[in-house]
Amino acid sequence: MSKLTYLQEEILKILQRAGARYSRPLNSFELAKHLNITPSYIRQTIVALKKNHRVGVRRGSGGGFFLREH
Image 1: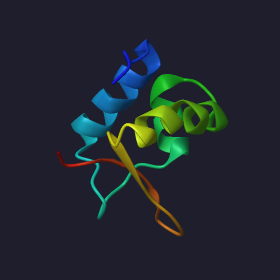
Image 2 (image 1 turned 180 degrees about the vertical axis):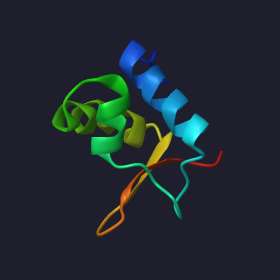
Image 3 (image 1 turned 90 degrees about the vertical axis):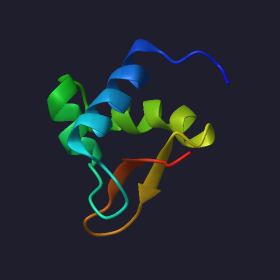
């Protein structure tokens, strides 16, 4: 697995602190508020975390991102 960027590490920390899981994900707007960046940049940054199976995505109403179980 490649080295994580600072922003990716911060996203993982926020998801962990929030207890984000499939039943209670955090959306890109909530993450962006914590990091003071745009939601679209969050979504671009999370692509690598999804490919590495570190973060999962719940689509639809009430959807968002959550930490994957290893």
